[in-house]
Length: 280
Image 1 (cartoon, rainbow, N blue to C red):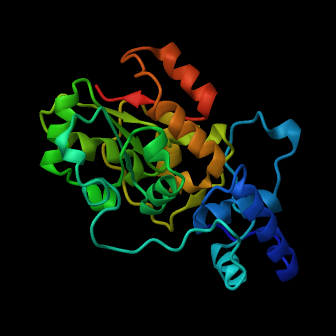
Image 2 (image 1 turned 180 degrees about the horizontal axis):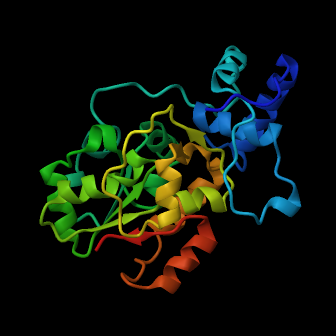
Image 3 (image 1 turned 90 degrees about the vertical axis):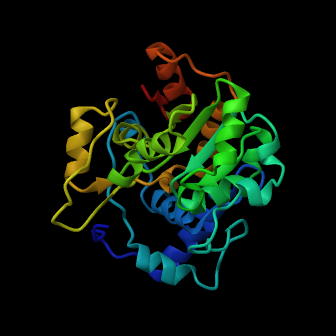
């Protein structure tokens, strides 16, 4: 991520982390990841003035991640989840719900980021939305028994939550391939670059030279492709935790959106900050 224009003093940074921790946990004591706390700290250090809130753009971080990590150690706020384990089996799914394969499964949520999947589970999204939550790292390829459960439900939907990045926008294609010929709908909740700009998220840049982009989904706009080709990315973790939970719950447990309704998709964007774009 870019170097911030001004160094942040240690005491100011520790205070900002404390305030960010309270904001991330609101309302009602939400659980959140370290990465989410980092982005909340960025918002505390650089609040968006009211006249600029309607301007769609992403912003550079005011704080290096390494400085945040150093200041956080020993002062972790309440609600902060421990770091996610690396490697091994995926979280949620069959290991967490052993009878998951015995019934029809009308919906499933797959997250690109394992930490985000753990955060959603810690806040009981899988219970409130009656929707199992998996992470792509450990959940793909999908268990054939899970695919069979989706088929049994009839008109099932797999929702995807991913970063606005080349690997993120490739996730719908990976899941569609994993489903094979199963008559299951794949719907991306985002992020894509226009979501990141609409929410004024902090974004980063990959080191140059930027690797060439792979095949892009049809729903991606030319300007978004240029944004990605420039090496820019925005993470789901940059979305405020409460807003992320509201968006996921509203879409995952709500009525199935019409397959070709542009007006319905725009309503979802206004309501939650995300737009669903189903596969063909």
